[in-house]
Image 1 (cartoon, rainbow, N blue to C red):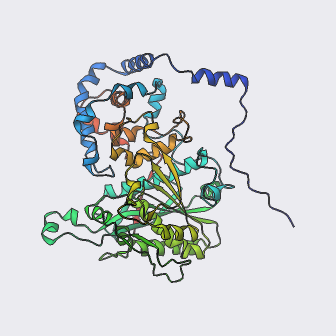
Image 2: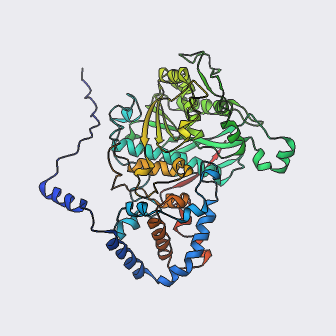
Image 3: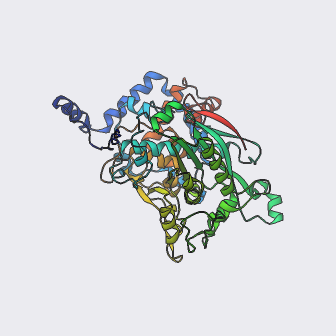
Length: 511
């Protein structure tokens, strides 16, 4: 009778560093004399790559193109919460001084569309995946943040970003038609799109005047499963991912403000343990349980698809990961509660939630039920994001947070302005950027973070420090060959961030 070796622990310690290496690190960590030398090097690099006159002549068109892209529905909060045009124009001297001095090569690498190491972690996590998936509540992994957990959180954030991309590419998508999901991780295969239906509708006269605003059923996410044998070996299990976007439609906003608590009772009578006094926000519950004219409810779609996948891969090691942003984060908790108390619980498949900027979902009894059913929830929260504070405890007593919290601070980023507006503090890309640079609550921003800031520049240009905005525009023009016409700018780096490249795949899903 043999005894299986115990899995290696997730150690945060690093090997000892030699004296020579320490000297090199100390030299590299020494602060530069001033920013002027680095800015001079940048200017020299740009002059060598092309004509400065082309940059100056193209600048007005670049500003116009960037402002036009900001009007796209990429922010997760209403436009009145964003910084106004007048406020965008000025930047105080303190934020300019706080900008770190980067070498031209380092800045150029950060402004590439895709990070050099690709979207997926490379390290083997087969022996420790249960801890990374929250088996023990991520004890000892959050502060300081374990590198493997950081990369897992970033990876699941990119699944949510693909859900946004699927909706924005076709906001009028309907059940029964093809949905295009710009999935970055080629190891996963989309198995089903997910639709949510609002329980409220617009008056007939208003719906006739604005048909797009009257759409009740919208593409809200998808289900994907890992199909790559190599990735399954690396992760130690087959992973089922349920990714959900945030609020994007008028009727979803209408549901968001319905903050009254309603009983959270599932039709699955075998779900256990059940808590009769568990209650959740009315609007979230309606979006989760309301069926459309030609589609079942989001709850029925998810349970049906997960049941099918668990039956298909019966006998394998399978995990279920639910991830979402904003409204999607709230729906993710409802999904995890139902799956852990029903089909996933019976199949003994662990359920975990990685949420970004999610609001409170229900009362303390509901939070206790989620934990009792075995679902593990990790809430990634920006300290300056207002959404996780809602619904407030007063005058709506009873709301409580679920699970563990990974608290970030947007002011710790060397690239974002310290007075970043509410929309930036809630933006999904800003969340992923902050996770990628987070070391610990008392540590500076990670200086070797590799994630590109190009999409952050595109989505939140008014909240990025002026130094990086200026150099991003200059590098964009030079890398495109110095063209100054508006037509050339449309295909530039700033315009290519949402296009599928070598590291991404576009999957067509049939519901």
